[in-house]
Length: 193
Image (cartoon, rainbow, N blue to C red; front, side, top):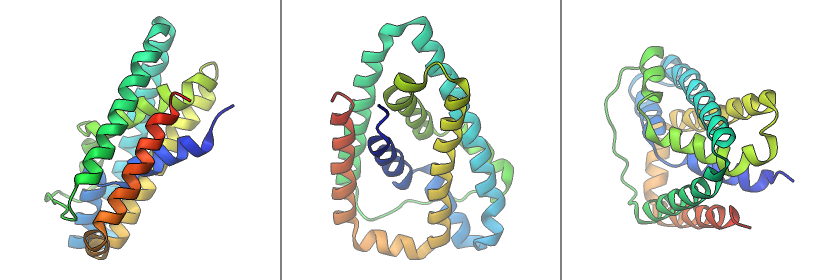
């Protein structure tokens, strides 16, 4: 039976933690305002969906051609989650910013060079989704859109909070990072249960 709790825990933690999309969304909204940052965030969502569809197709093909790849992918996924947990735990409250244009195309193109979402898509598909829905292209497509939408929801949260979120994250970084790290460790262990 598909475990929604484990899947959503992984998806939420992975997309809520700082990464290129979240930092750029926050930076843009802080510079140009939330309303003017919408084209950039729309570009992120469209690009994110494209990358999730690519990850879904690639994972499906790898599973069909080489079913033996499941165990190494699970191990790689668990290792990545533990790596994220470690980096999240040791991260300080400082969030690095990069200046970026705030247009649709900038948000779209960022997705194709963002390694975090490729790993997020492949681990999600291989570890949580394909074991249950590998014979249903419509459901796989729906999960790809869901993964992108979850990610973009948190991009918008980071944009909405802008500099306020940065201050809150910095103030409570140790507690926030510890909780997120422990949840990621739980997700890594649950892959094998």
